[in-house]
Length: 260
Image 1 (cartoon, helix red, strand yellow):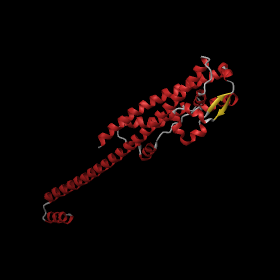
Image 2 (cartoon, rainbow, N blue to C red):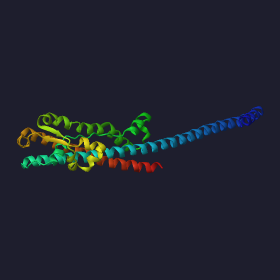
Image 3 (cartoon, rainbow, N blue to C red):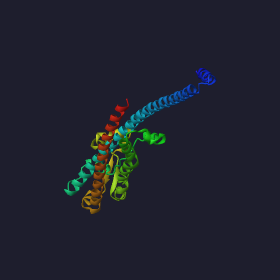
């Protein structure tokens, strides 16, 4: 093709037809430019298809990670609600001056339990390495980055108070540990399942050395009130994040549909 163009140019040049030569030369330049533009457009199309495939896969991975994180949030909400109910039952026994019951041994233990949030962030770390601009929807991108950079930090900060540390000094002075396996019947099934084979040797509970003193001790009442307030705050904030994640996952699903 190049040899053919060269021969045509040579014939026109030697024939002395300058105008014809110039017109041909301009036409040849235009053809070359058009060819370059077509090649660039094809390259852009290929790059766009590649980016769409990458974005599609990234959205799928982010959705999967956020779904796992949502499960962890909901598990922690369930756990904190269980621990809150136990603490309230203890408070109720004390305020109403009710007699001691073996079931309280389990509740004295559950009031000290702590949940730990484990977010799944593998896809987000990959997104940061590849470039956040892979996500074309700016609103979705902002919500994802805000969740991992701000919301997770806030969620972990609100759950930072360690209930074991909160109660430990008081427990050491006023409680003994009872690992009697007969107390297992008072434990929630969900806790026993989580503990698995360790349950028989580890699920007893804290037994007050002097229950009468405990009921009249204002220090213990303050500890209970503080623990209840912290649990309520954790449950409230985690519930908000759970609702947010449900909404964000739905938005990502809708975005995935547009990339198919």
